[in-house]
Amino acid sequence: MDQNNQYYDMDSYRSGQAPKSRGNEGAAFVGGMVVGALVALLLAGVVVSLVWLVNNNKKGSQQSVAREETEGVTSEDGRDGFVTDRMISKINSLVQTIQNEFFFEVPSDEELEAGLYRGLMDSLGDRYTVYYTPEELEELMTESQGVYFGIGAYISEGQEGSLAKISGVFKKGPAMEAGLRAEDLIYKVDGRETYGETLSDIVSWIKGPEGTKVVLTIVRNGEQMDVEVTRRKVEAPTVESEMLGNGMGYLRLTEFDDVTVGQYKEAMSDLYAEGMKGLILDLRSNPGGNLDTVVQIAQEMLPEGIVVYTEDKAGKRQNYRCKGDKEIQIPMVVLVDMNSASAAEILAGAIQDYGKGTLVGTTTFGKGIVQSVLPARDGSAIKITVSGYFTPNGRNIHKIGIEPDVVCEFDGSLYYDVENPIDNQLEKAKEVLTELMNK
Figure 1 (cartoon, rainbow, N blue to C red):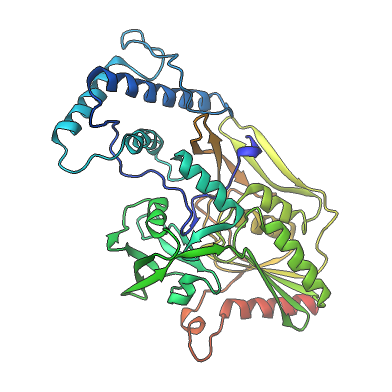
Figure 2 (figure 1 turned 180 degrees about the vertical axis):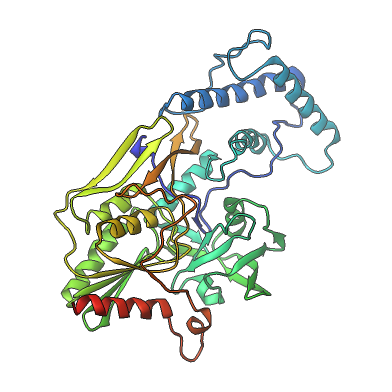
């Protein structure tokens, strides 16, 4: 695994910045003037580059992908690779049919070529394995830096077969100002139904130029409503902190981006300066982020030992460790919920395994697999699932999640009470932390 190209949990995106992935483009590459043998040769090169990618990933290669060579192509009779003459002939036939028969406007050559790559990734049956065009990859890298254009909300996949949803909104962001809330289900975007669409496609519909508007049709408590939001530039506040009284500090991590470590250190320094004697770490609605970021934050609070370890399909293990020289010495409570995923689960699981904090809330999302972003020479890339991860005690939480030490279901009726809003999970965390501080 190449950490320089490694990012976690990019299945959950901020609205307005996620790369498009696995769209519904047809698996063909055609232009108005490109036909016959020329198209066949072009498609052969496209498929061959994909074959190289698949074969080399089977060998554990971490090199750049999607090369332009045509090595490995053989005839159907003597084939030793993936591409055959029959495949090329069939693609050529499909191209001609699309050109002659397709009723609607045919997308650009570039869009259709990307559709071929996306189709191969989609055939793996893993919703976290996707193809990025150069433009989409640039957006992905920008997103990990914590600045983007959009509505100021986290958009997450629901459980399989359900609608995508808003898992969190930024304070003073466009989504909050428009009245959107966490747990709102996204039924339509500008009248376009979202059911069955990929998360990144949905997010690509929501994003747009600064100052433009988007209408989200949401479902809340069984009722459907339209909410218009004006897009604008948003700098992601990945860390929020305040003193809650009685020596209790509160720190919320909304995502693990490049900017998060610095924001975390600054916030913790301020909390200590204000007399913090106990900490509530809020990981609710945190969809994850970069591996390096979550490991660095874990190193700010855990004892010496493993933070997390990964294992690939060959059984190769890689450990991520903590020196233990910055171990937190005050009582800690960690808030989690069903939207705490991936990197958030790495941190929560490590804290629980080492007994450094008490988890309060509901069972986490359960994403215990690792994606690696592998760049190509042409500026494109794939994000592909390469391994699973395990907590320090060897727990595999994929599709299981992490159970809290103290179960506390979220009460939306209290939280959204206009006259007296109450976060019942936070109140429970205060109660638990008080007990720990008084021991």
